Amino acid sequence: MVPLESKKMSPTELPQAFRYYFDREFTREELVSRISDELNENVAYLDFVKAFNSNTEGDFRKSYAEKKAAVLLDSKYYREQIEYHDSIFRTYAENRFWDIQQKKLFDLQCLWRAEKARIPEIESVWDFDYWQRNIENCRFIPEVTRDEVDMYIEYLNSCDVYLVNEEWQNYDEFKLNEKDDDDGLEHPEWYDFHNLRTGNAVLLSLQDVRGEKEDYYRGVWRTETYGPEKREVLKPLLFVHDDEIMNDFLGKVESAQFKKMYERFCDMKCTINSQEEVEDAFYFLTDLYHEVPIESHADWRQGLIHARNKYINRKIAEEIPVVFEEYQLKLSLGISYPVENDTENKSFYESLKKPVLEGRRLKGEPEDFNF
Image (tube, rainbow, N blue to C red):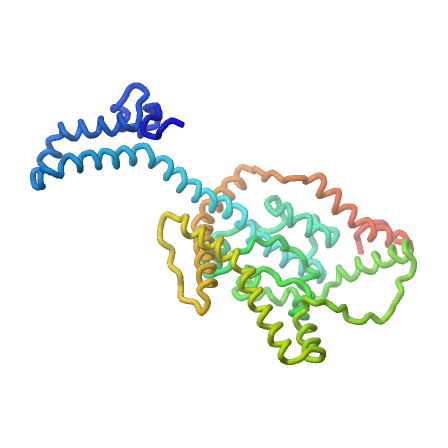
């Protein structure tokens, strides 16, 4: 293996302003020597070192020449690292920008299900799932505005949680969670933030008229296809990972001593399992090229994780205005966004609509969604 000092390099590896050093391939060692010789002929340098002990000048000149060579040759690597680091947040921002439109689509879904809005592009509840995956080209919701961008940036700068959400239009699960916090799926924190400022939380409480109609026709098809659904009183399911069930079980079956041991074991396991996220946060922060404040927290691990999350969200917030400008430019030029597997997605969601149409046919009604 060739030593670093002896590796041949092209003059193009030097910054443009310093390529005068060589018009041929050179080694790091040769560059250090050239810089040292240049210093020794530099009047300003010679005047500067007069104020210092002459016995130290030689070592200083050699050390400085090595440092200057490192700056000229190695700074490219650090610049590329910084550029790569910043480009990651640009990519994050390009994805997260569409959170704004997902919220508007969900609010519209609530109104459509309550039959308080009609949308030519929507004929079934399944269409909202399709548009969730093609939100960039969803033209029946209003365009993103500067005020909405400002609100989203405010949200990012206030948030110490970093989550990439994949469930934006899961109405049924969000509805279940609204009725019972222990059931269904919590909607994204961005929805909560938005609702506090717009009052749109009330939309989820509207009656799901349209969904109930589709369920009815789907039920007709299911009965015809699989026979009448057997009604029976179902007992609650027994799961060892249900905290409420386990607390009741341990209190009635196990001793108080074991119950306490079990609870301590679960706490320890939870702490150990969170270690991976703590390590990820630590290594992420140590790779940064500037300081990141860590706020006080009762648990230093959570303080570290929150510091990482807030940093990521802040960097995304810085990139959002640039993404917004590109979005506006594409709109003005009529440029659409590419969509992966669009044909397959359309085919899949069309297949999910068929049971409703079959139910309509079985009831002697037109096979359409005009109901």
